[in-house]
Length: 173
Image (cartoon, rainbow, N blue to C red; front, side, top):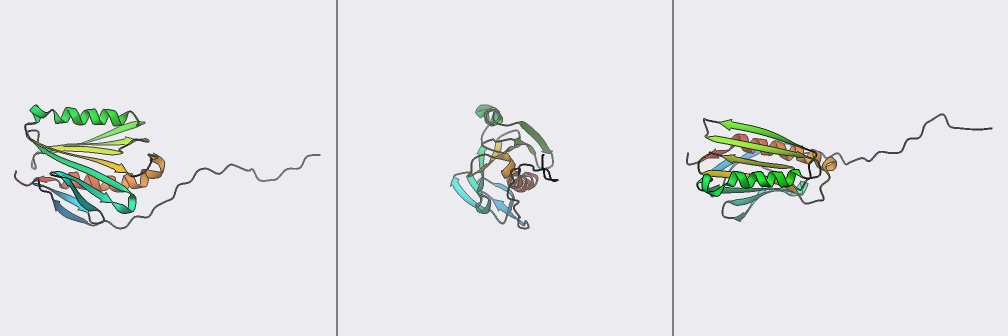
């Protein structure tokens, strides 16, 4: 004689903490290299060196490293260097999504790369005037890469990066 329960038992799936985020407000930030853009007021900016900054999200253990270079882009091959960084980071990605933004009015071309998977940096971007200015940024978390658990934070800060790129201006152009 066999007895069984009427319910089927299934193993519990892994669950991740569902964070709640504060409402966003933005303020205009101007760096020492004549660039201006909007940043989230919940972040703070730390100058690392001349024209290099960290935008720190303490509550989310994340940083956006930004860097500005002004020189003849053909001599420096900065875009080639950036593409090498993208290639290195994409080795860890399941997929890479590229977004392109151009504004002739503001003399800006940019690319934003979003890396799907457990990568060292989940978002990298650059902005250029295609002549002599290049501005880069990379999002890093102070934790072991785990895309599933970081995704809400990546989306939250990714929206801030989009706002930064959309609002970006060269002050002297």
